[in-house]
Length: 348
Ligand SMILES: NC(=O)N[C@@H](CC(=O)O)C(=O)O
Ligand SMILES: [Zn+2]
Ligand SMILES: [Zn+2]
Image (cartoon, rainbow, N blue to C red):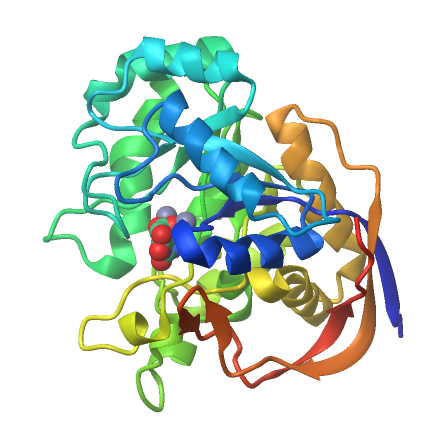
């Protein structure tokens, strides 16, 4: 049995670091293992243009612990008002690497998201032109659509047509949760890819709902049935370069999740690579982890792969019950559980 695993240093192609006092914690956790991360722009107010993205980037850089290297890859939050010029200015900055589509009302802080795709056609044309990937939270939002069906309906009603209309646009379907999404991405062109989270690989809706409701498993898109979890595990460990690491680590203070109306999002960045190692080991596919975590995302974004390495050792450790989160605390994914793999602390 392997008990040591050395990988090219990974990147996270989907993370929420939030803002303000919590950055000291969220940035330190991400920078412990990741060289770079695609930073989600759903702040209040969101990072909608190159100026807001640049200011946010500086706040993140200011929070990187001394002695660590960590490059925040910024994204723009698309609204009905985003113009082709906004995209061109963002591209010219060199630090904005993608733009994010939140259908209005789909998830945390998506109120200023896009109300109809037609509104962003000029921006999407500029993105295709610039080679800038569109990152998609792929869920429809109509009250009439069941929450467990919202991803599939988005593929059928919106994404299929969008990919046809913009055949050269790079699209990342973020945090996929269904066999339908796996199938859609597999059968699309090489310009379409997907990120997969550790929580959707390790858990299904039974973990969230059987034996009492577990708010720390509540995220969007919501955990699905076991058959979907199996399809995601298969895709992530397949060696297909269309599927790569994106944690969707999305911390919310403990009291806002353990509430009558709890927030959506799981905090995984503190042990992301260890959690993925658990999922890959379960599939007997640890040999596939490096490409998923460290090659395919950079290749898709057209960025160089990292050159330094990180090492994981088989050394069981217990996930703390809570972690500091600015002036509050956050309950991490798998709180209290024992993880088998541990990342060696080798300063970057
Ligand atoms: N994934 C989540 O459940 N929540 C994310 C938003 C998102 O990625 O949809 C958040 O910002 O809290
Ligand atoms: Zn999302
Ligand atoms: Zn997210």
